[in-house]
Length: 335
Image (cartoon, rainbow, N blue to C red; front, top):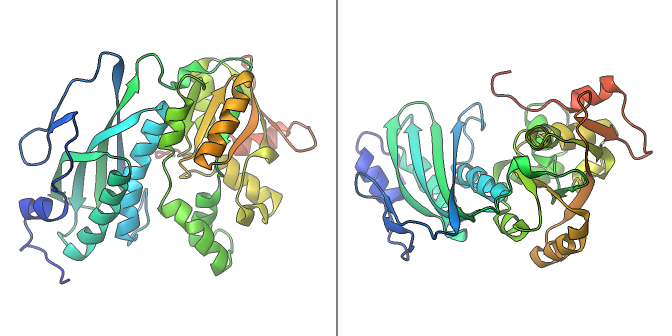
């Protein structure tokens, strides 16, 4: 397909790539095509769950990223936010700043985006387009039962701390692409999809409602994200750092590299959650039902003003402060 610039106007772009006839959603009265989308009221037993994420080229994704996977990822990170609250997706808006209205780019981008939207029955209900540096902004809407959301402030002393699937592959791939370390091409091919096409754990989040206390998705690094739960819940934690689940590829690397990627690496979009110890058997059942590995990595402890997270190695020894401090840093857009 030939690239189109000025001949592909804003409304042509929306109609061609993003406006679709979809099965009716009882909560979406009006979608794309008017000044506003119209949504029905939720049942009195539910709350809206709303999240916004912005992705900027060169900051959140590499220049010339594959548009299909970029479309997938920009929605996946928003679905992951809903998952962390235990919310069910309903719909989303999309705002795009584009250097060029290029059909060769928009075709795969929209397919990646909308295929994931269809998988989660999440309707595109509106948005905006403009010319400018490549920037993608999504606001997503979900539904969660009242008083059941997995809020960061709900962790309790004595809770087990869990992580879904494995973490660290996205950071391992990014480091290789940035030439921070060498990675054989066959190993890079195995871990790169975790960076480009994360899997939002929407079903897991909903299964945890009424069983887990608090949750967060891992976007900026496991320990840094866990710290948000601990601070908002006024508790501390012990983490068995060598129990943090890693892929076979990452497990084959040095202890130092594995720890760096699993503890500090972001962009995994797995869930870290806390739950009472008596829920362990239920969590095992969920793991089997979803065919999703769930690993206990530590415990919530009483608040410690001097040490938010104690890092404990496989020998049961606490890491010295100078070593622990480097793992406790997480990604910050302004640092």
